Image: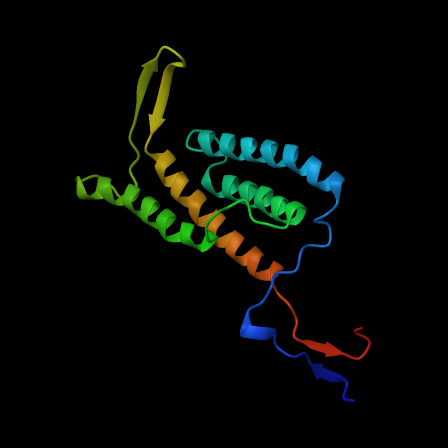
Length: 165
């Protein structure tokens, strides 16, 4: 026998995803629910405050990716119901459109506008178009990073070497 043997491909060419090693762990599954919610809450706070303070779409996207990867490891399935790579073009279009609209109106590219709205529930509330740009960056970061992480999680080596058994 050679030191490298090729495993036969799966029947029908379809790969069945193998569950993560910790998927059935009840402690991880129960604590990941609370951690998932807290990390998402913090990510949305960073996204919300990002146009006025440090933070924004990039770091909120990374935090959301971490929460979604934790969910995938704990439960064995993605919390998203769509392919994460589909988020990238939507985020690019939103970010580019946010910069293009002011340019078409004769203002500098990516010029942000802001104003104030008063509601009975929140009182005076500031809005800014920079939040739309940050939302686009958020979608690009979540989509691209999750696509990369999920591709790495689904790697199934097809060759064995001596000592693999």
